[in-house]
Every structure is written in structure tokens, then in C-alpha cells.
Amino acid sequence: MTVSINYEQHPCFNPKIKGKFGRVHLPVAPKCNIQCNYCNRKYDCVNESRPGVTSSILSPQQAVLYMDKVLEKQPRITVAGIAGPGDPFANPEETIETMRLLRDRYPDLILCLSSNGLNLKPEYIQEIAKIGVSHVTVTLNAIDPDITQKVYRWVRDGKTIYQGRKGAELLLQRQLEAIANLKAAGIVVKINTIVMPGINDHHIVEVAQKMSEMGADLFNAMALLPTPDTPFQELGEPDAKTLAKIRKECEQYLPQMRHCTRCRADAVGLLGADQSEEFHGCLIACSQAFIPLDQKNRPYVAVASTEGLLVNEHLGEARELQIWKPTENGFTLIETRATPEPGLGFERWKQMAEQLHDCRAVLVSGIGTTPKRVLTKYGIQPVEMSGFIEMGLETIYNGGDVSKLKGKRKSINGVAVGCSGTGEGCG
Image (cartoon, rainbow, N blue to C red; front, side, top):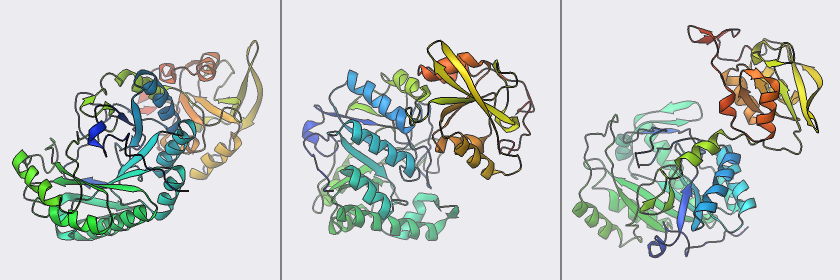
């Protein structure tokens, strides 16, 4: 499809309307594949306004719910973006699904993404272009690997971690490829370059020139924000005069963004009038809401119970799961399903997810990291709780706050009683 570009209602790309239209950043991407020397990603820090910070993480479905509520209170929001708190393409499935759901629900919404470019693969670019993501920002801090290697502690490609010049070369190669592919797809590209005194401040104009040659549309020379507990915490912020000089020199190559507010990963509102604190409670509530991926084709809920009254069994120890459904008079148990044999590791949880293909959730007293990740990927919400089965079912089917179901469980040395403590979910 041809990407539809709207400059008139995107405040980051059009400073004339920054007080008229706003944006919301949806924090669905917690993972990151690089470690910057200026970045310290603290999630729950509502009073801190800088990139990499958010009060909570949303699933794609929760992000749509949050978008609904934001637009109810602030209809001037015209842009929905993903800027972390990690990198959108270190979390490609969550990112693309969120964009797809938003496009289906809000056909006229401007969709944008902000990435370091490392994992911005051609197939992802094709997919976001098909969805109609029109604006992408790539943070590129140098075009010289000798400078780039000073900015990052490490770069992770898949399971391999690179450091020093090798990591810098890989990152730069991927960034340049991504920018070329984005432009080929008809997407507007903004370049963010962080001005770091003594590191790359002498090099910014070269970056702007190269980006102009590659067809970038906008350049944002951003002042470093020194952040505690990072290698660059003592580096210092470039003064306004230095920044103005750099931008003026860069302007001979690309239009400059001078109204950037260094947004949080959960920023919401107009530029310069952020409402993140106001929407903090709403964001938290949405992050705790149970929203199944496919309610129509997942009518049931699985329960780990020893007697059919209480949720009182760890998933890894359960030899069978009860399958419940709602009725006019409450809930009824329709069958039990044997769980896959232990000892299969990851394969056990994959088999279980396939067995529970018609279940929107599984209620358990405890669950390991691996099964939780696998079941969630297959669209089954794991819910840890203690108490009556009916209480859990009411919360699930009525869209309540599942976090309130979780009670304190006895443990020994930090490991839940009844669990082998392997971290694999007793698989």
C-alpha cells in the first residue's frame, strides 16, 4: 500500500501545530538490544521525564484500551507512537500487533515508531508500511564506528553480544540499511542525534550531511540529558549556544527540529504540556486489565485445582486442568484435560498451549517464567491467584483487575512451596 503522510497533525514534525494536536506513547516494548552509556531505564518513575521511563508496560490489547480512554479525555491526540521503554524492534511482535490493532480501530490515527535501527529488518519495514505507519524516528549518534563505540557498552544481535568497534560497525550498518529501506517504503524518517560533549559534538554536522544524502526528512540534534548511574552521568549537558550553533550548521542539509521535549516512553498530551502524571492511574489500570486476544474463539478458562473449589495448584505440578465456562446461572465445569508429561522443558509448555487453544486464561496458584511466556505468546493469559475458582472466573469474564486476585503464598528461600524452583515452571 502507499503510506499516507499527514504533516498537518503530527506535532513532532510540524512545530506550528504543537499546541493544537498531541501524541501518546504506548509503552509496549520493554526489551532493548543495545546499552547506551547515557541511558538508565527506570520503569516506575512518574516524576522523571526522559526517554526510557514509563510507569507501566502494556500488552497490545491493553494499549488499545488505554488509547480508547486517552481519546475520551483528550480528543486532540492525533498521533500514537511506540518509543520503548526499550526498542520497538527488540519487541517486534508486540510492536507490530499494537500498530495493527490501532489501525483497525482508528483508521485516521497517525502511527509512528522510534527505534535504534539495529533490528529494523526489511520484513518489519514492509509490514509497518502495509499497516500504514507513516513516520519513523531512528536514533543515530555517529556515522564513524570509532565514535559510535564510545556511545554504547554493548550491542546484542539475537543471542550474540558485541562490544567495541565490532558492535559499533554492526549497529551502524543496520542503521544505514534501515534508513534506506524506510525511505524506499515511502516512510517519513526523522533522525535523532544526541549531542554528547567530547564524544560526538564535533561530528553532528557530518551525520546531518550523510542523512540528507540518504533522503532523511528531519533532523533532531538533541542535548544529552546526564542521567545518574550511567557512564555519562558526569559528561554534562551542552549549553544552549553550542546547541544552537550545531543546529544552524546542520540546517544547511536538513530541516531542524527545535521543539523536542525528550518524551517519556508513556508520554501523553501536547508537546510542552505533558499529561503523563494525570494519566498515570489510567495507565496502571489498563496494564492490569485482563483482555484476551480472541474472546470469540476462546470461550473457556482453565483452572489448576486439587478439588474443584479453590485455585490451589502450581501449574508445573498440575497433572490435569479443569475447563470452565460461563452460564446463565454462573459457571460450570465442562471437562478436565490431562497436562503433558513433565520433563519435556519448553516443549511441554508449547503442547499445553496447543491443548488450551480455546481458553482465554489459566488460573493457577503459581507459574514459572518459561510457561508464563509461552502461554502468553499463544494468547492465553496466566493468572496467579489464591481463593475460590468462582472469584477468579468472575474477574476474568467481567474484565476485572486480575492483580487483586493474587494473594501471598508461602515460600522457602524465595521459592514457592510446591515448585521445584528451576525457573522453568517444573517442566
